[in-house]
Image 1: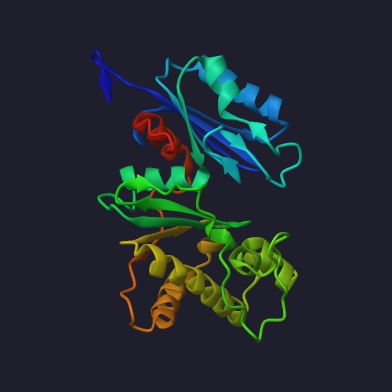
Image 2: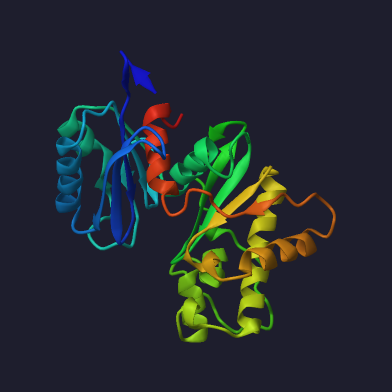
Length: 286
């Protein structure tokens, strides 16, 4: 990406409930500067991001992949449970302070775009990107366009069958036993009384693989993705990706073809690199 003989640089921000990651660059091999800092109060956190970009090379635009839920058109966080962040304008003050265009989307849609541009979804028009960690989030593309509509995808709150042998009621404060409420890292810890990385019981991970496969089956049947890219802290469990792939085949029962289920190639930078790709692409939600 060059302009007048020089590389065009873009800013990327991946906002999270616990930390913000910021970077300046053009692609995975062209990062000029980067930083990560804890998510504090909105004014303090936004000011820290602005100061980082002001100290860096001149950028053409900023892309933001934000935790949600969000209002894509306003560039704002909406009903998040993160204390102090509900209904916070994120894109507006950053654009005004830096004097550049700001492209705002969800963190998972940004990560999906990063994987499409440089990672596991290169060359694909329709795919799903999912992350399974503290919660479950998802984004993706359909025929080359990021998934947008009335708002943005909320894969984590899809309702899936609750295993009758599982007495856990679910951890989602809104829906109880939705997909996130049954299969997120928060759900695993609440069900078994300890964090996912401390659990070695094969039965616990077999249940997790079944729940994840049920959610993926819904995505397959609705969107017919050419590939599913799935990452996040829970998916770092050795063998889980293979178990989920096997369970997905079983759940689909041969009725429709199961797409490849793969790990992100850009992790753990999928989100911030995707935010740079958002800025370079310059596509606002319709």
